[in-house]
Length: 467
Image 1 (tube, rainbow, N blue to C red):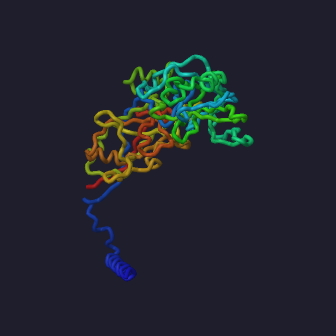
Image 2 (tube, helix red, strand yellow):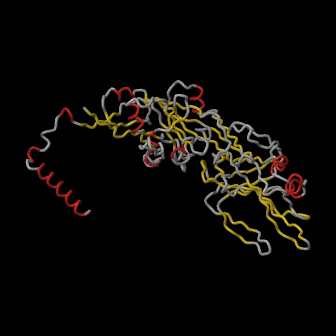
Image 3 (cartoon, helix red, strand yellow):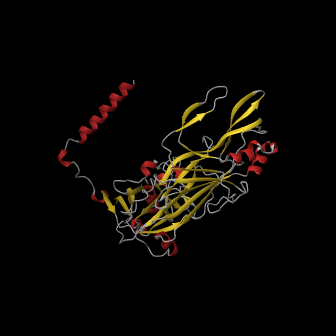
């Protein structure tokens, strides 16, 4: 029965085609010019652009945490440090009889992103916090957290999240085993600090995590470049539930007449009971960014985006009324092209990805319909790759498709508030890239909308006019 219906449909279509082609000389002559559909391009867009600050952000519950020391002549100096809490492995923790420390190490898992010079040598220092972190603490990125000046852990080396780390694992009742673990940072911790505060500490401090955190407070971690002539870098650390980040103690303890080798781990996870704070300080002194921020009115030839609560670029398309005045049009494609000026990526590569978003009537960030998640009311959202924002090293620019956004404007479905460009997390998807200013290390120099700029931001619109 299905084959019969298909054959009948094929026959009817064939008869229709044949009857329509009996007079081939007349094909196309019946088209009414009044109903013709023509394609046009609109390149006469006027875009105002301006570098503006991101503003202070709350660093509580970040998925990735910045650490580093980065300096260059374009963006100035950025320093990021961390204050972390430690989690007791279990209530009423005991270290056994006459515990004898072998070693202690602070293990920090990488989030696999780095901006800067990978050949830079850094000094990683660990201190004890003076006050423990609670969810009521100040977690703004500009807040510094007091710590004891005594260094309790230090290491000198490079950031390397590509090569595995060989570690000797202790096996109870058997020989030690050397294993290769995922790339991570290991900072040796002072034996005297561990003996005094852990192995030989008051047992009451280890009854539960509340008492433990009141006693140990937490750790402050910093990263400083050793070579003054290098730009340094910023990396991201992972303190999620799947991370390997922890303070690990290796010690021996008596068990009757037997000596056992024990490993005890104090995890570092960003939870209510064990929050983590990031301090991120940008210094723009002596840079063009400082000049633009101090004099926001004049339009410059270049603009900037910088992650970690740095700066972003504000865009405003000032002549959208000209598109509306074209009448009944359908926008086939609207492409925003943002060039990266030559000579601005010699020391630090451009951000892998930037993100374009708008604001609502209250000034809150709002996603464009072109990158909106699929729903029953919005089916036009593009994939992240289609929407754009990824740096093209060949053309040296970023591109965004904003077809639906412009179509909604000319049909008066939305009000065109300001657009913004920010550095984005290259691994984020859809709305997860919506707040990209503190989950990435990227930064880049961009062209501007200034008409005389050599690297002008352009909006290319292809549309069809329906008469």
